[in-house]
Length: 279
Length: 279
Image (cartoon, rainbow over all chains, first blue to last red):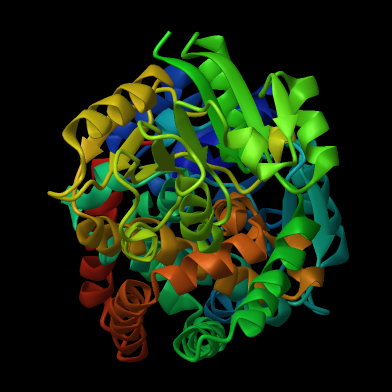
């Protein structure tokens, strides 16, 4: 047992999977869930993602050794600040947010002995909610930690051990670098998938095949969650979007000019990158 | 048995799958393959996709009741014209090309008694070659036929029966409509997938997850095949690209202006379309 009690704030897909994995792997003696929606919390207990739930925030965080905040990104900092001034010294926070720099800035300075180690598990799905949570969601996936020089080293070690115990590999990098890279590898693909779906008349869907299905899959994700992610990483997303738009403009020019060799090269560049990723 | 002999020109993923399906379902007594690459044709025989092969074009088409042309799109019309003037009256042609209007125009008028019924099976993969061919590739998929008012009705019936016998459902529409719809449901997604892959530094790939994997999957497709498809459907692809670019510019504007409600609406429009498609 790494922890006595862990408390999960926001028991949806990520929070629910944290609970399932923690219990399946014996990471904590007791898993408490906090949320606003009593029905969801009941469902989380029935699924075995949490042992008990508490709609009372203060009681839910009492006695927690580790608090894992899995709310939408635009609520994470506020939750941590609210909890940090009510929990005991020694409490460690981590989160599951898809953006990192803005959250850390908004969290700011915490009371003595209370530590926050930002995390982003690269796992997810276009399906939300605890009903889609899985004990193996983090298995073999990567979790990125973005501690700063000022983050308590012992807290970083504990949080790293926690995410590893859930089954994921862990790397550390700066919040800046995280947000810049993820803008291209996660946020841009989402905008683009939604763009393709958004210009497709529904009556044409019967005339689509596997390619359309794959490209647009993540457009089924939750609009509120994703609007918050885009706003939380606005500058990096705008920069990635501009690089993408420029690249597509090049495609347009090659196609308009009938430049077959240029088109083949443009496509071959992309294929090299995709082939490096594997299936 | 619908046919005595069918001849497949171009025994790659699609041609090989036509052969495997035709043999598995007893659609023809004899399946002959024609191609330029003897090694590939040998492999097709070993896989059971064709009974025999012929690198000599004229001998390969002799005695064929149905000739299925599965070459890259920019070679289909030339193959049909070359074969049409050497085969017997009563021979029927169909194809597996991803674009339809330009091919039909380039094929033009055929000798009396020789008929071409253009087809596009909506099945494929980012993996090419007969080694990836499958007998069930067309199972439950849609094949679009684009005959004109001038196409021989009996030939259309035979070709429709052929694609149905391979396991696919069949619809008919005009070549114009086909190309316009497929520009959005197939060609645009491919350009966009390749665009995302093309702006991603390979060293960032370890920091990607399922979303990136799905969105970029088809970017692993063959650059030569796809350059030919884009060129063969240039005008419709440019129009689809412009609609997509406008839609993405709207996303950029909403994000830049911090218009959360607008972003949610923009994403919700896309989700509605994607949800209508199903998983």
